[in-house]
Image (tube, rainbow, N blue to C red; front, side, top):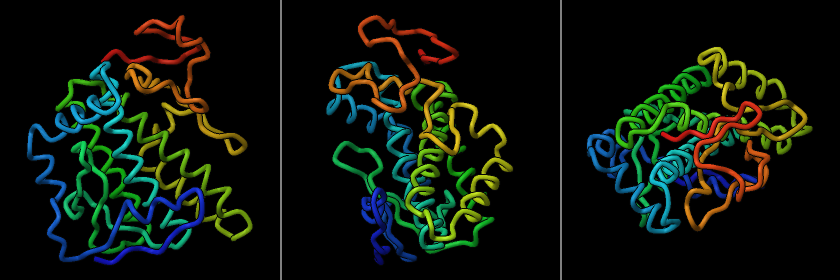
Length: 240
């Protein structure tokens, strides 16, 4: 198994989230998803660590963790080192944490940019569909997690790659994703000057050990005045 090179802050953790091994014996993603209770076991593990609380919130945290561990390394290694990892769903293997959540991805190698961007959309679509089916939650909840991770990664990479001549590559990546999924920014508010903010609440503060996120939370109301199903200035707090 070959570890990828370390990356600069704020992507230093990415080296622990992905490795390259063409002959890996780790669990293929297909085998994980064929296990009809695998995602539910991960949701249970999140509830044990961060709960008690709303199971919908735990399901959201499962997909957010998955997309964070998948998308951040993918785009960071792609933009900063021009290694576009082969994360096609039928090629990827997974390792699980003690909570039964996906903790690391094992990939067989790299791809060219265009097929790599296509593969990331296929991968996101698959996981969103699986999360909805296994947990009874809504597509927009999990899609918003993927979209937020993507746009936050783009924002951080713009800063990390400043002065390195990566601006054109970053624009190509953003345009490539939006060409494949024009609505991939529909649940996130983002411009080139400020970090992204969610338009769909991730529900994390329905878990007793967590509070709402400090920077990206779309809600301006104090936590104590907010109800379980609320809307504020166009924000959605999904109840499913």
